Length: 266
Image (cartoon, rainbow, N blue to C red; front, top):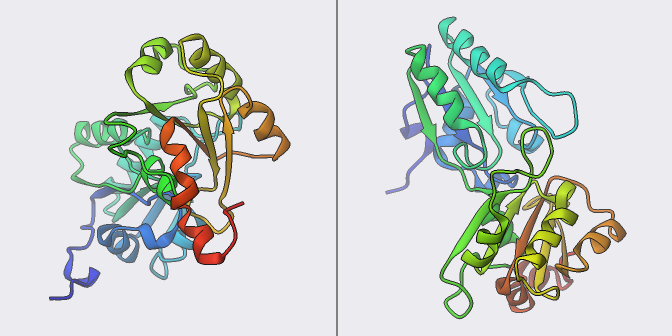
């Protein structure tokens, strides 16, 4: 049987769906996410949702930006959560659309708790996080039985833009062979220094992935000791994802985008 998004329930008036839009490529949307876009009265979206995904919203839907980007003027999280409550109380069908997955560095937990406190019905729709989808589009497996049986996902930036003080970089360095670091470009120098000081090899493989899964995706292969300079030389800009560990070396065989085009991914 062929499953079509029209077979799925639509957003009900007065409810909120917290939906992951995936890392950027609209082909990575879930059927639930597509259904939400087709039925919402208003789409409250963040800064990492691609325009090609927003274009899938139904005719007449209001698109409201509520993104947060480090170092730039942004709405505060409590204001966004309150806005979702207010819109639902107006009887609207509300889609809160987030890049990646709403529960992985997406603040979806905070918004869900605010909705629950206000007695607003809501649904959680998971999305493909950049740490999985972005690596796959770069030709880097998150795990491989010959290299790692553990992986750690960590944020490289606290809410104010600084390196998160709550992260034990020494323990993290020793605890997982592969690290996937979100929002790390701004603090890459400090992160690389801490990982090397904790025992990671200076020549350990690193991949820097910008605009993951989009046509503008770029992948830089480097090492911990050279990552900062190589990123600067390549003029890499956020959003960018950092992968550290032996799986990066497997890209030589698994760069499927490069194999399709006949050229290595830039």
